[in-house]
Length: 203
Image 1 (cartoon, rainbow, N blue to C red):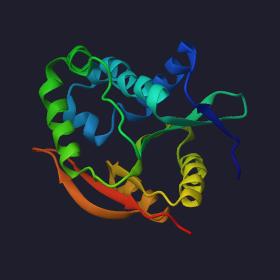
Image 2: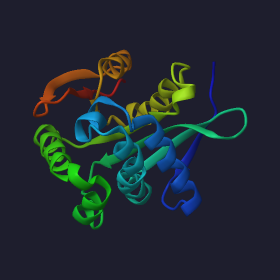
Image 3: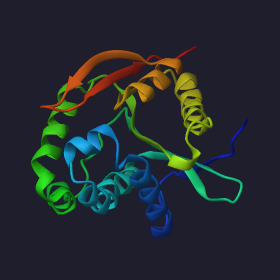
Image 4: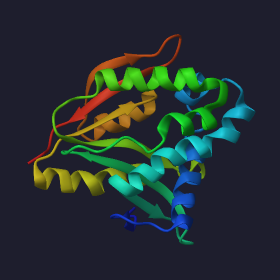
């Protein structure tokens, strides 16, 4: 099965598009292993997820590359947020305040997560896949693979490696099938493992 890939972001996206991307990422990510570790309360987690993910979506819209897939009705069903770390990118604007507002009493755990991810992040120039999100009702249909293939083709032509953190074994195995290798396992305090993964360009 093939999917129509539309490059949603080069630089500027309207607020409506940003909101749609944020909603999709929140729907896909709010109940994952890391999200549950960040905030065990499902009601608070679901309520706060859009505000938390909005920080990264807006940052990707400004400094990254965002790809999306749409279903037969034109509704977005998958999105990939990449950051080209081949040059310096500033941190998200007003990050600490926005995290505190979004995470509430999970703020300390967000900072623990950030520190753990930063400690393992490679220094070599690469493209970083911050989020690959597929609407729950559309998962296991090849949407994520289509999004990966779209950007990997560009990276391979340019000879640029890729990096990501997988947050559960199923995602890890998907990335292994797409040429990634596990570099290390990131351990969160009393939390789930994350797999730091690196993909060399395929020539």
